[in-house]
Structures are given as structure tokens and as C-alpha cells.
Length: 176
Image (tube, rainbow, N blue to C red; front, side, top):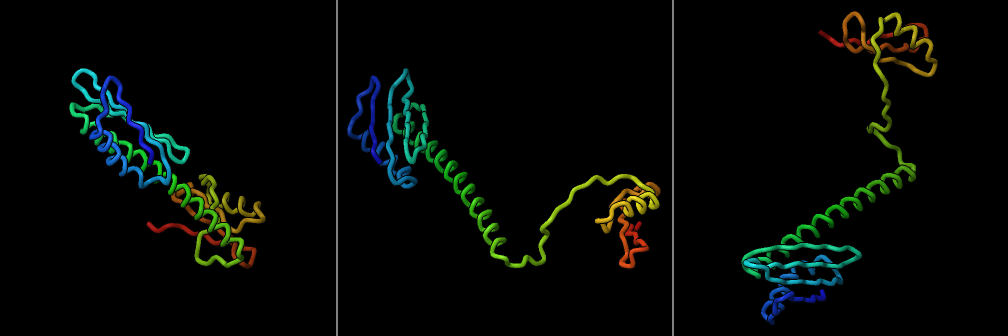
């Protein structure tokens, strides 16, 4: 990591420069190549450290203000490290989700048979009907084998279905 320390109305000593480089070494592990611009300044009773890191096309910025310059440098490095970890975690999560989606599409294309999995969802409105109305509605739907409905008489969800003989119907009704 390339570090540039600038002092505004403040003389940057060798000790401060070494301390900044040593502390920014914690951030260096996240990137192969990066540039950090550190600005230190003193205003009234506060020592301010501001760091701008450019790495991998990303920009991270943090500022901390403490009574002691070394404490403000520690705090600003902690803030930056949190930002970098958060960004990296988000990117890793997106990449992982993308790879899982890609893996699922590859496995689907491979022609392997999917067994014991819910592979299709259908959503529809459950309307209040009598059993006779539900039977008539199911007869109108040639491609459907069952119909879920709210039974007007019991206010419970029922399912009416066509039996294999094609002439009769079955009814699924919850107990109690």
C-alpha cells in the first residue's frame, strides 16, 4: 500500500508517518494494490485524521476526531476496516448467489432428474363457494384435476378433485 501523509497547519513527524503506515497495514491485507491519502490537522482542542483509500476501483473515506492524534488515527482505521469488510461481504454474497444460480441452471441443463423437490408453485385466489358450485366450476376447467375453495357452509378450505373414472368427484375437508 502506498501511503501519503499530509499535514494541514501541522508538521508531520517521522513517528506519526510510521504510526500511520503501521496502522494502515491492517487494511493492506484486503487489497493487492492500493493508495491511501491521510490528512492530519489540528483544530482547537481536537486532532483530526482523515483517510481516503483508493483500491480496486473503490473509494473508502473516513474521518475521526479525538483529543489525541494517535487515538483519532486508530479510530479512523477501525472505521475504514469496517467499511471495507462490509463492502467485501456484500460482494462475496452477490458472487456466491450468482454462482449458486449458475450452478442450478447448469444442473438443470445437465438433464439430471430432480426428485423429491417442489419445482413449481401456483398462486390463486380461494373463493367462497358451495360444494355444488365448486363441482360445476371444476367441470368447466378441462385441464384441472382439482379446485381449492372456501366452503360457504363451514368457512373452511376444501379441495374438490376429479376421480380417475372421470364421472365422479372427491372432496378433501379438514377435521374439526
